[in-house]
Length: 237
Image 1 (cartoon, rainbow, N blue to C red):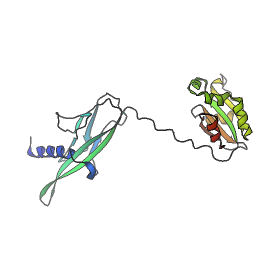
Image 2: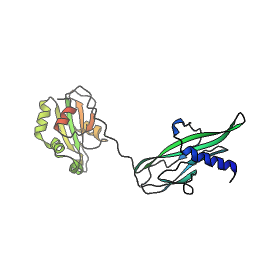
Image 3: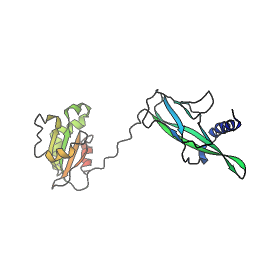
Image 4: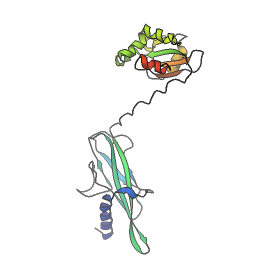
């Protein structure tokens, strides 16, 4: 092994043990990982790219990364884990620069993440509610095939006459509770429902479509979980 290569290798090993708090931003060297989430338990190839002449780089030892011979670092390897989630890979790039006649090592710390398995979905965004104004014309759209996924309180919103009476007593106008699976071969939507149907067609079902009683833009929202939440959506206490 050449003396210079040995020196660079030693520097790489030492640099991996240094906390990267003072890391410099690399100009070209990068850790290359798959752009899409990888399957848990499936090995994937990762490597370092963009090295300049006279520069060396290596991965820092990681629990799920196999690189080079045991206990050594290298610039490519196999990443493997059955643990889902986001994992961090670290590496260092080292070059020897001459300053005032002295050989000085320049170290650049690298960091990249690799996603194993699909990321967990984030929390649903809060329902912003309709623009203040009201009272509202109210239409609910649902699908027969999805009723098994709805709670009993939501099913009551679809068919409960008492709930409809409460809505109208609050000054709103009930338009329809419409099962889109009942359109039939003709696909004809009743005229009074058609504007609401058009506004809701690209929204996940079940959903509620609202429009001002005196006319205006139709807004669509996920069907609330129960009557109390529905009334809050309409702006009632």
